[in-house]
Length: 138
Ligand code: VL7
Image (cartoon, rainbow, N blue to C red; front, side, top):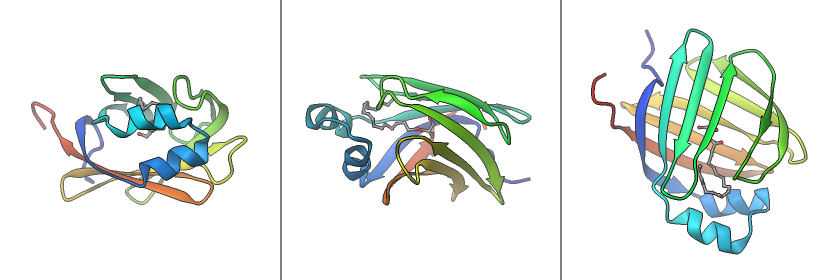
């Protein structure tokens, strides 16, 4: 049984976030605020259905999807774009392709050393985030 993505997580590192946001076309003023945030994730899973909540003191973002089923995603409060998104498993990695105006856009989640890892990518930029587990029970 692979380690579960489910639970509550808190960001402990965030590399190249600014260039990822630049690739998304986020304004300098918004990037300045975003750069200071400690992001949290709450991931809930029921079989093939996932709910991923990203929260912060500034804004929150929730996405709900079923693995292998394309869905319409609106990145409300982020870059406010409409995407066709598709999440799949590749080994122990959960990979999302976000098709839209921006090329080569998506993210990958996996567990390594009890940490939640996330790569956010867009048009050649890769932001790497690591989260520690803050669930009350595992
Ligand atoms: C979501 C934000 C920057 C605009 C607000 C600051 C951040 C956080 O897509 C994401 O996660 C996936 C995988 O876990 C599930 O949705 C990343 C955060 C990236 C990009 C855009 C700055 C505005 C607020 C809610």
